Length: 569
Image (cartoon, rainbow, N blue to C red; front, top):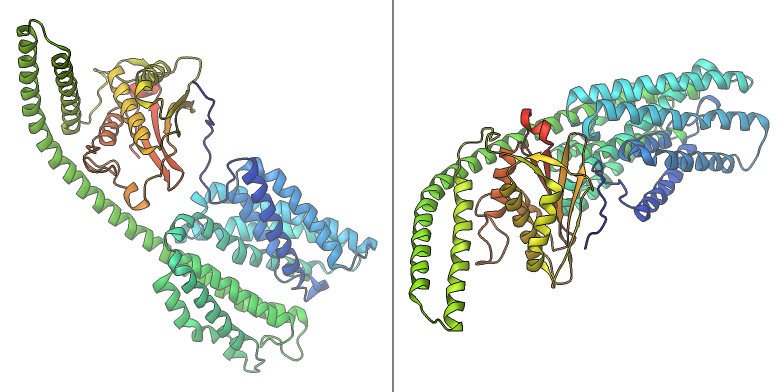
């Protein structure tokens, strides 16, 4: 009956592969995007030694490493290096003169080193890979992973090139190479990180995707008009962004930080393409290409930083407002729960007294029947089962009404969670099978937690019955334990229809149920939540429509639970 389940926990990410097949899909998509970014970068060759003035591969590779766990880094870096080398050979028309090969081999080290440093520092400094979540984090993101990182790496690479490539201009080459990597990180890595970290929110607002596409198209058209017409008035071209303020007002009012980062991509591509194709207002007579690049840098870098900084302020304010709304909602829920608990406590006591009296009368009736027939015994047994259900419901109401959330260690005991799971699965097996399959996997060694055995059984019975009710006949209900660094995770997973997103924040509320009328009381998960709160544990619910629901419970180990305080999530 037991089945081995996957007990590994992974950092939640929009592109993190969950199995070998999805890993191959991610690698394939990365190869396509990285190859496209390579040829895009080569199309911006201009200025000193025709070094690209915008190098997207650095940003694409760096963002990909941030979004993937480190176990995928080697594969991604190998794919990137192979594509980097082949695209370099193709861009040079398959010429393999020693000077170009030296340039290519030294340049090949730039992408991996810069991307690895970028990803490592981002994971340390930027929580949840959201560089625009607040202005302070954005400042750190610009200073360390981008500016210092690219400055040091590009200086080392250009120094090597000055020794391996005869006549290579060190200072001018370093300045252009550094600028290319900085812009590649800013306008490609930043949108990728923001889109990936906001993927859930984007999925909830699919109706605005078309509007965002229209807005970006209008923005691109306006940028083409403003930045592809040579104008000798030097001052005028720096004020052209004023004409784009209505578009930015549209972005701020309707979208937010994610789309604002995309506008920097559009603006940079238009301005740099105009420069490379010699139709830019920044390209003036009498200036060298290196001077034209400096002029464009003086416009694009401040403009990009300003837009991203404003986006970080808006994102921070938005998240503060959402946190305030969430706190208000929680306060309303707590008030609601407190009122319901007070009412439930009084009802439960009266209800329990009536149930005790009914069971006593039933015992008297059984004693008075001398020779009951089969139908009578069947009715009496049915009444007894109903009284058991009444007592169970009364216990749930009393648990819900309990106002004291202090440590209950004096009433707890050391319980082997593995044994408790095995006992619960054995007891619940008849309720699950034969219509459903109940699987469980537990460690061979005992896992002790500080909890009453009856509480653990109540938790398991509630979760298993919920999983059964959510599943169709023939589907599996999986129960497994996995040890963490300081505790143990109990997961109950079903293969049902899942919980709609609009209900997922309410499933722990008392008397809330997604079951049809008459098939649920709405107390099961509320009781589980109350017990986990008393045990200093955590509860987490993940549900995907069409795929099922997983309820994860974290129990501190016996030694940790006796002295630690936990948070309910």
